[in-house]
Length: 354
Image 1 (cartoon, helix red, strand yellow):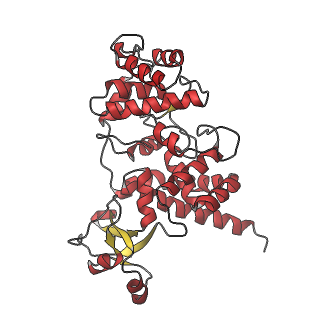
Image 2 (cartoon, rainbow, N blue to C red):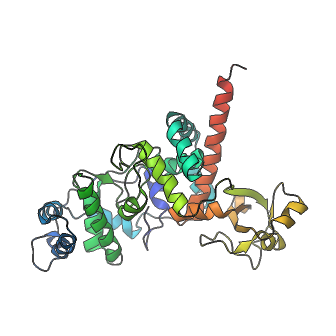
Image 3 (cartoon, rainbow, N blue to C red):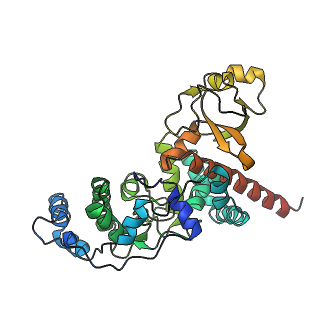
C-alpha cells in the first residue's frame, strides 16, 4: 500500500488496470546515490543501517546499483492523474472477466482462503477482491525495480523523501533478512510489492508465512499473500461476520449536516444517518431503533446522468480504507467481492448434479 501527497493511493491499481505503469527505468545512477561518497544521502543510510547490524558490504553493493528514475518522479507528480467519478472508477475493476477470474482464484486457493477466514475472520471474497483490484490476481505486480523506485523517491522526491527513506531502509532490511537480491525484486513505481502491493513497512509489519515454508514471500506465494491480507485487516480491527456495506436510500440533494464519503474512523451513527434522510434498504423500523447507535459511513456516489446513489458502510468498510484511503477504492473492493462470491456460488450450483 502506498500514499503520497500528490497522487491518491487508489490511482495505482487503476493505472495498473489501464496499463499505464511503465517498465523499469535504466537511467544512470544519480551522484547522491553513491554509497561511498562522503556526505551523500546514500552513505548516511549505509551508516545508519550498518549501525543496526546490516553488513556494510551488502548495503554498499545494493545502493551502488540503484538507478535514478525520472519516470518514477513524473508518475508521483500526478502528471497523468485525473479525477474519476464512481461510475468511471467502478468500470475499471468491475468487469465480467475480473469477476470470473476472481471466482477461479477463490477455487484454486480455497484451502488457504478458508483457513484465513477461520483464523482472521475475513471472508474469502474480500481477500480475493483486494488482490484482484491491486494486481489482477497476481498478473500485474509492477515492472519497476523496487530498489530504483525507493532510492529515487528517498533521495530525490522534494516532499516525501523522509517517508520513502524509511521505506527504502525497510526494503533493504527485508531483502537481507530474507536472503533476497534487492536488485531483482520488482514492484510499482512507488515501491509497492507482490500480490497485495504492500510497501516495505507494511510487508515487515503484516506479511506472514501462511504455509509454513520458512519465508514470507508475497511475490510468488499466493498462500502467503492471502494470509497477509487477512492479517492486515485483522490488525486494523476487522469485525468477523459484519457486512461491509448495505444499499440505502437518500435525498436527491446531499443531506445537510451529514458527513459523506469519510475514510476516518466512523463517528456517524445509524440513527443520525436516518434522521438526515439516509435509510438502509430492507430494514424494519424496529431494527433501525435497535441499532441506532451503530457506527456507519454514509456514502453518496455519483451515478449516471448526474444522479446519485446511497450506501451505508459499516465498520469493516472503514477497515478497508486502512488499506487504501479512498472511499471509491473500498467501494470497488466491496462490490467486486460480492460479485465474485455470487459468481462462485452460481458455478457451484451449476456443477451440483442435484
